[in-house]
Image (cartoon, rainbow, N blue to C red; front, side, top):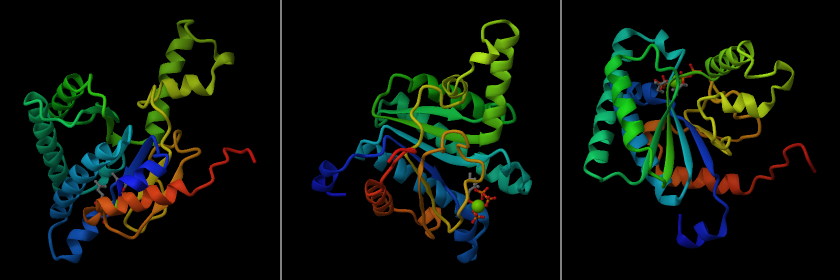
Amino acid sequence: MTQEQLSSIILPKHIGIIMDGNGRWATRRGLERSEGHKAGANAFRRICDYGADLGIEYMTFYAFSTENWRRPPKEVAAIMKLFRDYLEEANEREKENESRGLRFHLIGERKGLPSDIISRLDTLEKNSADKKVMTVNLAINYGGRDEIVHAFRELARKAKNGAVNPDKITEEDIADNLFTAGQPDPDLIIRPSGEYRLSNFMTWQSAYSEFWFSDILWPDFTTDDLDRAILDYCHRNRRFGGV
Ligand code: IPE
Ligand code: IPE
Ligand code: MG
């Protein structure tokens, strides 16, 4: 995006990306699916840094859903190894003070993830907590419905001990008990790979999101594609039920 374009638009505050199409990318090249995930992880690095350069405040990357455990153990293990490698690298960048000012936040169930990944995530969240350029939500072991169940349990507990009046529960109370508490809803949700569904991504938060679909497979997703999505978004007329 040129400086001129950038200064003439209002950027989305929060962009969500469903990083889909890794497996097909690999299969089309006669490679193992795990190679597609590796290429997808590099696309994530590229797009995440570019989002921060543009001045996006929040980006959410859907990396592993609560349903993705249904995949063959070998594929799940390959994906977990990529998380391990990335988290190691991001923690190293924090330590060396080479981060681009990214504040990392896990959205997803810690329970169920390998313990060494949880501890790497905890370290990264802790060490990047004061960073201000962009918040990066890593949606790992994430499900939109699971997140809502989580919020229900939290509110039910509070109702039981008297901290919450069930008749007074508001939309804000629910939002405050999601993994994204305190963050704005995604303005723009991007799904590549030619699928037209959310696959359990940000079920609550996407009520008024704008969607951008494309046939590009995630490993091929470029900074120009992100520009295109953002520029399209800028021409949408968001009415939120008004006129
Ligand atoms: C997305 O790519 C990565 C994960 C869901 C972990 P896929 O692995 O779903 O790629 P396709 O959809 O099979 O091409
Ligand atoms: C959605 O992709 C989940 C992630 C990208 C992490 P899937 O490939 O799992 O979605 P479906 O199964 O095609 O709906
Ligand atoms: Mg897929």
